[in-house]
Every structure is written in structure tokens, then in C-alpha cells.
Length: 362
Ligand code: PMV
Image (tube, rainbow, N blue to C red; front, side, top):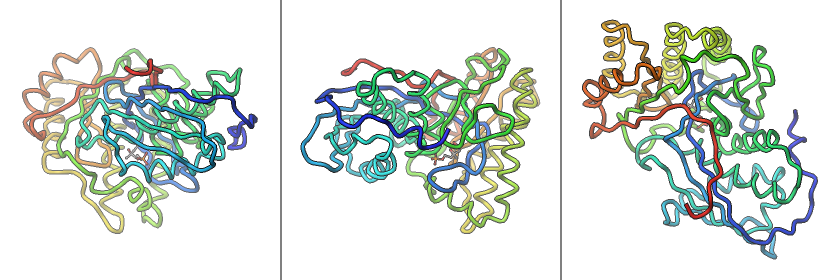
């Protein structure tokens, strides 16, 4: 598929005024995307678990207008949020070619997150995917007979233009984004549901997000991705990520949790190693991030547990574990890991299915 296939054929529309609502989750990468080129295209393939409890709920109100040009307002928790508007404008500019009606409507974008705004959890994946689905719901009313598979694919394609990792939030529980020889149907343009057999060990996989450092990110992901240009280890890193994704295929099939731990933790540390060796360099882990990692490894050695960690581009720790270990690991988190979190806070999440349409007003 090429970009051309996402340029619709309709010209005018009779849709006057209305509202649509979607709830879209965040996702956590197992093999990380870090480094991009062209228009939001990834330098390597990545795979993530779609989450369910950390999500954004977005309602898009639209009304046809006479003049051309973008016209929108963004509200977070009912309050106008002008700080979000430049990012939405850039998003609109990037997708206008694929959503030609954008300039013909006034939009009011109302959004709320299930997680605290200052928690350090990025809302870009959930937010951009929710907005992309709202726009696809409008397109669906204008162009009849759009197949569901195409709607999801194009929503992922649009979400990617807002935030790369957002392309992996439309469906679930496992999504691959980025062309990869071993993954049939994979593409740099959009995320695809992981197409192969997955062992029940990975059903309802748990992710407890430990809030080590709340607040603004030290490095925005745009700046972070740019650090991979001229990075001394860039090519090795992109090759490593693609190899790790190949390694995951038999691991997912056979439910090999020990091998899963090796891949996932190596990926997290490799992502951080890239930031520690770029120019300028960054240390995004905090002392409590390391303390948590140490405790997880100790617990594993002592108990034989299959719990492991991964990290985003920040200090918070995602603690991943199979559903059959839920009681014991949650107890461990509460007793041993929570004291390392800001105000003892963590979020209990688990894998999910992706975006869902919700009745407007709820
Ligand atoms: O989607 P972006 O541009 O915010 O990049 C996200 C990158 C990581 O979260 C660090 C890794 C990933 O694959 O999600």
C-alpha cells in the first residue's frame, strides 16, 4: 500500500453538523521505535502491547463553515488548552491531503485522559489515535461502503502522522509498526495487528506503571528521535531492534517467558543507552528507576517469577507480568516497589483491544 491509497475520492459533503466520540488506549513498546526519517517513518520496526486502562476519551464536534482554513479549539477536561493547539495544527497540516474536508469545518475537540495529566505518561499515542478515529468516523459518513479494515488502517496511518507510536494504538493486543521481512503485511505507513500465533501466557498480560518521576518530559520525543541522526550506534541499533522482533516470533508462539524477559529488558536498556551516548546526551533514569530494576531482578531470582520491566523515554517503569502471577506480583509491587514511586503512586493496566466508539456525552 502507498500513501496514494489513503487519498479519498469524494469531493463535496452534505454532512452539516454533529459529534463523534472515541476512547483510545496508550501502548507500551516491547521492541522500541527510536529514530525516524521522512514524514514520520520509522527507522526500524517496533511491536507493542496495546493497553486498556490508560486511555484518552475524545469527542469531536464539527460544524460546516463557509470559509476555508483550519478552525478548531482544544479542551482538556472542559478547559480550553491553547498549548495543545500547535501540535494539532501540525497534525492537521500533515493529514489535510488525506482528509480533504478538514478545512471546511469548525471543530471543537474535547479530550480527557484516564491518567493524571502530570503523571509523566505520554498522552500523544492515545490522544492522536482517538482523534484519528473521530475523523475516520466523519469520513465514513461521507464515503459509503468503507470497509472496517480500511478504516482501521487509515486511522493508524493518520495517527502515525500525529505521533509515530500512536499508529500502534488503534488495534490490540499486539501491534507491529514498521516494515519487517518476517512480519507479513507490515508497513512503515501504519500499524498492523500481530499476525501470528500467540501463546496463552501472553493473554491479558499485566502492566503496572510505576510513577517514579511525574511532570514534563526532560527530552521531547521529537528531539529524542532527532538524536538518532548522526548517532555513532544508529545503524547497529536499528538492526538490533529488527533482530529482536524476529526473536520475539517464536517466543510469542511458544510462550517462552524467560526469553521474553531477555528481549524486553534489553530493548528498554538499549533505548536508554542510545540517549546516554548521543550528542547531547541524557540520563533519563532516576535513582529510583534503578532501585526498582534491581528489586525486580532480585524478586525474580528469589521466587522464579516471570515479572520484568520496560521503560519509555523517561524515568517511569512499566512492570510486565503474566495474568497467572497477578496476585503475587501486585503484592510485591505494593510492598516493595511502591515506596520508590512519587507519592507511592502506580497504575494497574493490562493489554486491551484498541480504540472503541462511545456514545457522545459519556
Ligand atoms: O511516538 P513518539 O514519537 O512519541 O515516540 C515514542 C517512542 C518511545 O515511546 C520511546 C518508544 C516506542 O516505540 O513507543
